[in-house]
Length: 137
Image (tube, rainbow, N blue to C red; front, side, top):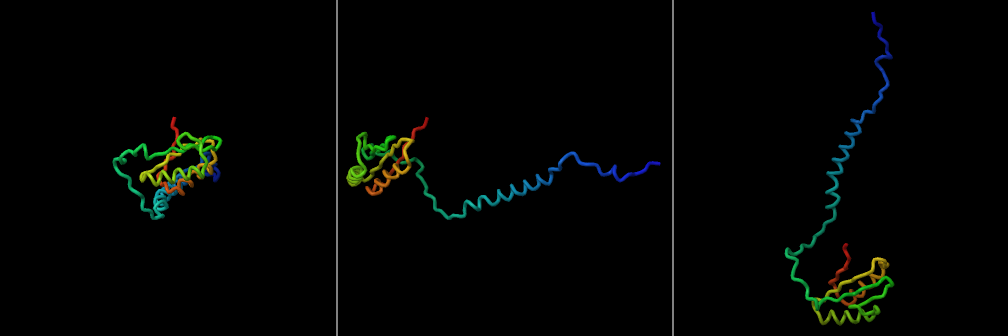
């Protein structure tokens, strides 16, 4: 006759049961999937709608280029210029040209404040069309 021992039924487990962990992970994933769209639409915005064709290309005569080199020197159409004089030039340009726009080309090593200073000049000159040019390689 065989004797039953209490030790034989209770052996140590060599594996970790990951089923409850996977259940928890799936429940959290479902919660995040449900709540993420609610977080994004929490701010009421009326987004602008662009035209389908992109519009007519601008007249090259209505565009001025402002460049800033790595030393912070500002150029208007390849001529060195100071910020107060730049403001006067762009104010006159904006009054003469109703579709006036400016392209800013800045060296990548510049401090951000130097670009903002040029943008402030554009604001004071009442030129609202602005393009920041970058080089893609």
